[in-house]
Structures are given as structure tokens and as C-alpha cells.
Image (cartoon, rainbow, N blue to C red; front, side):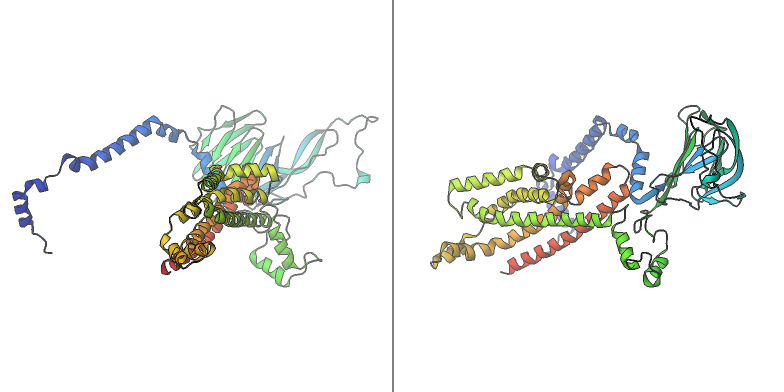
Length: 510
């Protein structure tokens, strides 16, 4: 068909103006709809105070929370003693039992302290000896043999009075926070450097924290004389208090993911580990280095790889077994519920109401019921999936049966076939690919659902995930399990899609 030119269209419009005249609704409907949507968004923004909610959100906490998924912190605490410093680390530090990070340097000197009675204190180490300090000898208290030590005070012998003790202690600590930031700590004074800015703080021990100049934008002090919080961005932060400096230095990655601090392979490079496994002397006489390395990885105390993978396998098994059992039970019940297959009103209603009951109760609620009945574990999860999916499959299967083409069934019946043969050759070829496709889809979906119901005690990785989240500290472990769950869901989704596609192609060819 030839297209009209602009002049020809103009002539037609002149002869028949009514055909080219658009109504009011046709001209302004799009604009009115767009204006209505814009007004609704403005109203929702005002009514729900979305701007206020966003401005009042504690984004620092959200940022730290997200950072905990992909990084870890090392937390040295520097305590102000009378004339020296004491460095300590948490009990379960990612640096092991005797942390000496390269970014913490110390200067030592002999100091005099007045003690009441026998001195039992010792200076604490931490970090590396600095090039600007002189190492005068080993740190410690009394190292004399037990027989040469002076006896402690007893009820029969009066306590000795104050005495002066000379010992080597830490008198200065420099903590490097990234390439352009550092904290220089001395008794009575803290100097924080960030880029070109410097913050000097005087410390009155156990009394107050006094900055020598107005605080920069990256430091804050809520009350006069109170603690000062210093931020270094992602690299960490520090809290300067009158009795100690709490430092939180953050690093990218998951700490000790392969070997924990108790492993003889911990802290060694990949090449060193390979060399030990291939040709090194046995670290444990009973087993080879390879078996020891595998054991240390699987039973890593911080990451618990073996337990996590076993729980993940439980989740997969829960989803598979629950889905298979539900499919097998729903299959015959659906024939009884379908009106065209079983022309019995009472039987149809009984089974359809049974399906409604089973699927009306959420899978999470069923999981709570069965956790109470069977105790925490995979059996409760399998039962929850089985009950919920039996109702869902029953409804889907029966509706599929009610919508089949009766011509095939009538053709088989016309040759005098028995009722069972009629269903086998007149019904199953039509519905079986659909049944299998629906079951495969729910199998993939139940892999995700099994994680949720596991959190309420139904076993699997969901329970492990909930335990890690409840501590509010092990967010890197949460990220690890979430990544594993995503991988499993991705793999099973592709497997399910592959088989469903093949089933539907086979059904269309037949």
C-alpha cells in the first residue's frame, strides 16, 4: 500500500476534519496521569515525612555495618598508667595471642614507679620496637628463681610499705592508621595526625581530655573534658579517653579465612604453606602436613567451614526431600480433587479444602509447629516444606487436570480402554510435563525458603545464619553464608530452568 504524502494528508484532513480532531481525553489523558503521579509522590513525601526520616538516619552506623561484611578490625587499647603505657588486645584478636602488628611501634625506657608492697605488675608489650627508642633489656617483672624471691606478706608478717621500683616500660606508642594518619600516644598527651592536620590533646589521667585547639571536622567531643572521637574514614577510628585510647583499625578482607590463629600454618604465605605440605617436616607426627592443612581449614574455629557446608547441604536436602514428598502425595490427591476426573462433589470439596488448609498456613508457621514437635533440626524443615507444598501442588495439579483437552481422553475411551488406561494415555501425557515443571520451580524456590525456616530452628544454614547475626559482631561470617546461599540458589535456578525448558520443548513436540 502506497503511503500518503504530507500534502495529500492535508487535503484529506480538510475534507474530513472530524477524523483528525482528537477529543479532550485523548489530548490530555497522558499529561493528567503524569501530573497525578507527581502530586501523589509529593503528598507521600510530605505525609510520611520521608525527608525528615532520611536526614535523621544514622548513616555512620549503616556504613560501619556494611563495612563489617567485607572487612575486619584490629582493636588495640592503650591504657595510661602512672608514668607509662600499657597496650592490650581483645582475647580473640585476629592477630593471635601475642599481637605485634607492624603498624604499632613502641618506645621503651626505664621508669620509676612507687608501689605498695611487693610489685607484681608487668609492663605489656605490643607492636614492634621503634627505631626511635632504645631497647634496654627484656620487659618483665621479677625473673629471679622462686627460692630467691622475697616472701609475700602474710598475716604473721606485716606488709612492706611503699617502695620505688625501676622497670622498663612502654613510654610512647605510635599507631599508624593508613599512609597519612597516625596517633602518637604518650603519658599525658596524645597527638593525632590526619593528612596535613594535627590535633594535640592533653590528658589529665582519670579526669579529663583537653584539646589544645578547636577540633577539626573529623573529631568530635560531646562534653567538655569528655572523650574525643577521631574518625579516619574507612581506615578506622579512635576514642581518646582520660584513662585510655581505644583504637579501631579496619582492613579489607575476611581475617583468618583459611587458617585460624591456632593453626601452625597461620601467618605463613601461600608459598610457605605449599612448601610445608610438599616437602616440609611433619608439623604433627601423627598425620601428614596435607591432612593437617585440610583439617585446619575445615575446622577453622573462626569460620567453621565444615559446619557451614554441612548446614548448607542440610538446607539443600530439606528443600529436595520436602518437595519430592509433597509432589508424590499431591499427585494422586489432585486426581481426586479434579471435577472432570472424579465426578464426585463430596470428594472434590474435601480434597480442595484440604489443599486450602495446608497452603493457608505459611511455611514459617508450620516450621514453628514442627520445631516444637520434633525439636530443632532438618526433620522440622522437611515437614514444613512438605505440608505447605502438598497444598500448593494439590491446587495447581487439580486445576491443570480440570483444564485438559478431553478429546484425547475420549479417543482412548472410545476404543474400550479401562479407566486406568484412559488416565494413563489420555491425561498423563498432557499434564505430566506441567507437573514436573511446577515441581522443579518449587524445588528451586524451596531452596531459598529452607534458609528462612532454618532461622526459627528448622535446621540448615538458616539457623547458622541467625546465630551469626544474633551476636551483632560476626557480620563477615554472615556475608560468607549469604554468598554461599546466593551461589546455591543461582546454581539450582539454572538447573531448574534447564530441565523446565527441556520438558516444555518435549511437550510442544508431542
